[in-house]
Length: 489
Image (cartoon, rainbow, N blue to C red):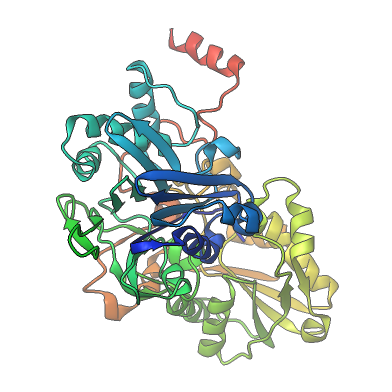
C-alpha cells in the first residue's frame, strides 16, 4: 500500500439548461478514489458562476441542501483533491475561481508543475498576491496574464503552456466555453465523451464518463487543447481541437496510473487498467515463483495483479483479506496511519489458517502498512507469507503529482530486498523488475504507446528536476523563511 494519491477533474457542457451540477456530482463520485481531502463544483448559468467546495468526501461536501443550491446551468466543472502541493485547507480546494477584466474563469487541475516555485516567485515579484498554496493558482495567474494580451481564452491557455513544465491535466470554465488541456508529455490521464442528449463530458478517467451515462470517445492527446462551445444558431455543442503543443515531447504517461491510481474499469490511452494489472501479476509469477497454497490480493489495487499471478502460476486465488467499504484509502488520512489500517482491513481466518500465502500488493513505501498486513495474516494463522509487489521498489521522489517528495521516506532507498522482507515480517519478498514494466503496456499497443514515466523507480526524469519539491513548500513557518533569506544573503 502506498502513500500516493492523485486529483480528479470533471467537466460538462450541455446543449440546454439542465442540472449540470448534479451530473458533475456523480462524475466526481466516480473519481473519488483519486482524492478524498476535498472537492468542489462550479456551475455556469448564463455566464454567472455559482460554486461550492469544502474539505471532505463528495458525499459529505454535497448533501441534498448543497446540491439544491447549485442552479441549473449549461456548464460545470468539478474537482476531487488530494494535495501533492499545499496543505489540507479549504482555501486549497478546487476549482479555483478568478475574476478579471476579461471575465470569469474556474480551473480544476490534476498534476504537479515541476517549475511551480520559479513561476510563483516570478509572479510574486511582479505583484501577484496568492490566496492558496497550491500550484493550480500559479497556472490560473499565468493564463489570466496571457488572457489580457490575447483575443481568446484558448489562445491564452495555448501561450501559457509555453511556460508550464511538468504534469497538468486541466478543465477550465469561462462564461462561454468549457476547455480542457493535457500537458505535452501526457503525464496524467484526461479523456472525453458524449451523453445521449449531446452533452460533452471531460474527465480524468473513462469510468466517470460511463458513470454519468456518457459514451467514451477518446483520450485527450498529450499537448492537446479541446474547446467546447455552444453554436449560437442551433444550440448544439461543437468542439475544436488545438494541437500546437502536440508531438513536441515524448509521451510519458505515469506508469503508476496503471499500477495503482486509476480504477480497474477505466481505459487510459487505449489500455485497460484491469488488463495491465493482470499482466503485471502474470509477470511476477514468472520472475518470482514460489510454492504456496493460495494467492491473495490486498484490496483494492492488488486484486487484479493477484488474479494474474494465480492464472500464470496455477495456484488458487482466494479472498484472504476483507476491506471495510466505508473507510477511505489509508494514506489519505496522514495522521494515525496504523489505526487506519486496523479499521480498514481484516483477515479471513478460515481462508488463510495453516496456508502458505502469496500476498500481492501494488507497492511498499515506508513499510508500516505492509508490516501491519503481514501481522494480520500471521494472527489469522497463515503458515508462510510470500509477498509480491506489482511495481519496482520506490527509490526516487516524484515531481509530477505523486506524493513522494523525499527519498528519506522510502524504505527501499535505505534497505535491500532481504532487509525489507525481514522488517515487514514476510518469508520472501519479490518486486516487479523495472525492466519488466512494459508488460503493463501490453504488446498489442506497442505501436500506439511510445513511452511512460517511471522516474520514481529508475530516476530517469523527463523534465528538469526542481530545486525544491516539499509538499508544503509554500507554507514555511516564518523562522524558516528568515533562515533561508539569511543564507541567501
